[in-house]
Amino acid sequence: MVVNNKNMSTLDKINDYLLSLQKVKTEEKVIFYRLLSTMVNAWMSLVRSIWVLESQEKNPAFKKVLWVFGEELKEWKSLSECLELYPNSFSKAEVWIVKSWEKTWKLNTTLNDLAIQVEKVASMTWKLKSALTYPAFIMLVVVAVIFIMMTMVVPKLLDIFDDKSALPASTQLLISISDLFVHNWLYLLIWIISLVVWINLWKKTPNWRYLFDKFILHLPILWQVTQKIILSKFSRIFSGLIWSWVSIVESLKITAEALWNEVYRQRVLFLAESVKSWVKIWESIEWDPMFPEMMIQMIRVWEETAKLDQTIVKVADFYDEQVDNIIAWINKLLEPVIIIVLAVIVWFIAIAIMQPIMNLSDTISEQ
Image (cartoon, rainbow, N blue to C red; front, side):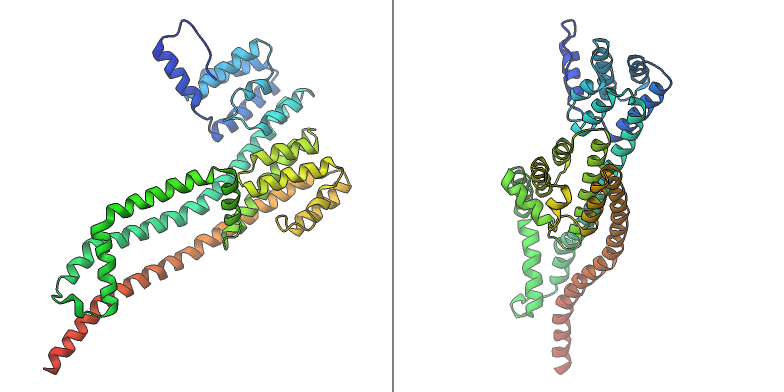
C-alpha cells in the first residue's frame, strides 16, 4: 500500500512504492506480534504501541508498514483491517484470527499465540526448503566437478593417444562426452536455463501445477517429508482458526489457500464443501490416502467430543517431530550415496583412460 501525499517528491514516491512491494519477514512478524502483545497487556493503547514499535524499527520497509498502521488506527480502523492492507505479508489466516479475538477483547493473548503459530508454520516451510536445497546443492557440486574434469582434465589425458578410432568403447564414450562439454557447453547452458524457465512457467498454470504437485507427492522418500509438512501446516493453521471461533467451513477454506500444494489445496476445499453439507470431517477423509489413519482416528474421537482445536494442534506437533527425524535421516543417507556416485564416476573415467594404456603396454611387451 502506498500512502498518497501531494507534498512528496517524485523520488520519495518511487522510494515509497518500492518499499510497499517488499514483504515483511517472518522473524519481523513474530517479534511484532510478541512485542505488541506485551504492550497491550501492559494497558498501552494500540495506537501508542504501534508508534513505539515504529520508532525503534530498523527495517525501512516494515517501518513504513507500521507508520501506515498508526495512521489507519488513528482513523478508528481495527488492527485486522490494517493487516488486510498488506496481503502479501500477512496471511488471511492471521487476519481472521486477529479479527475474531478483537471482538472478545483478548487481543494480547491472541497476538502471543499467533506469534508462536507463525513461527512454527514458517519453520515447517523452512525445513522443506532445506530438505530440497541440500540435495540440489550437492547435485550442483557433482555436475560442476564433472564439467571441470570433462573440459580440463580428460582432454589433456586423452591427448596421449594418436589414433583415437582404435580405442576401446569406454574410452570412445568418454571422448564423446568430453567433446560434448568442450564444444557445446554454451548450448547445454542455454538448454538448461530454458528448461528451468519453462518448468517455472509451466508450474504456474493451474492444471500443470496440480500434476507437478501430484508428481512431488509420488517421489520416493521426499513425499513423506512433503506430506507431513503439509499436514502439519494444515493442522496448525486450522486449529488456530477454530480456536478463534471461526466456523469450520470458513477455517477449511482459509487453510486451503495457505497450502502450497495444489493437490492438498483442492482436497481441503472439497472437504469444506462436504462439511458444509453436514458431513463430518473424519467421514469425508476416512478412506483418503492423503490423510494418515492416525490423524483420521484422532479427528474422529475429538470431533465427537467437541475438542477439535486441541486435537489438531497435537497432530501438528507430532508431524513436526516426524519431519525433523526424516530430514535428519535423509541427510545421513545422502552422504554415502554421494560418495558412491562420485566413486562410480571416477572409476569409469579411470577405466576409460587406463584401459588403452594397458592395451598399449601389452602390445609393447609382446613385441
